[in-house]
Length: 441
Image (tube, rainbow, N blue to C red; front, top):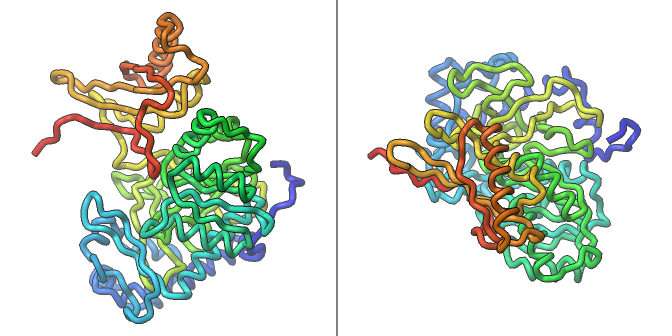
């Protein structure tokens, strides 16, 4: 984005607030959040141990370090109402994680909380260049998952025509795009790749739809994947970051410069810490993102360990916003694979796969035991122009992928090539890794 490009600010005063004023605002909000948190048994005990018994015990932002970290397990242990800081009668909505791996984490909202959340999502959407003339198709799961209703409300606040299409049913998604002239969509990056594949399969011409932008989130993805989606669909793709513990979407978002996600610091305090020592790391160095919410009264959560790996950009953005930017999420601390002693993130494999033009839009990483050693297999679909019945180019492509992967991840993987559309497709968050190694009991 050129410096001369006009930026769209949803709340120009707050988005461009000088750092000293922004930090003064954060301090006042933090005091308020601590006061709400002290109404809950969990924080009353945790903060009391540190001598924090009122919001006024927080004298500066440096006092944030006095507050103990909060973990997902803490939230699960407090299920269902352990983190509710207001009267149950004041709550108008709840969202919850799926709970597929244990007790769900539940977040409550009062009417003002919903309004603030909606405003942050609207800020994100408007900042990408959208306005009331756009038609927004929300191709994400509705329900307890925050992504559906969060983006829906934000789109309506911007004034867009919102189509709550939900996830899946790709053929119907195309019909809605064609019938109503959809210009903006929200989906997981894996589903956007699937959409492009299905367009070719069903003969949906690019000139039959008016799509200009997509908001992608809910799963980590590489810059190569973004470039592939943009190239295949001829659109701008904007990276979105949020998590249900921090309301959902609207925590951080890319502006039109598309160079890092602005963390909305009037709603959240962000820290990057070493995941092992929990000590802060310098700007530019990757670590675990820790967030404190400043914009929700019903469920205040302080210093939440997100497990997401990112870094802060040290320099300001050319768009003029003063809120710090996060690097795209590299992965999660609990997503890291250890293969024969080598640490590996799935995103490292995705970067390689998506940079090879002959490779298709879907892949799967499989880890198994081969005797006492781990065996890594990368399964990937090939592009439609590759003939599966011609062994020589297939073998050459397989070997080229293997060599590039080995040079990148220092592990010698097996590579399997599959016909387009034969690997499993997820309509929600993509499952890219199957770790079939036996677990210690």
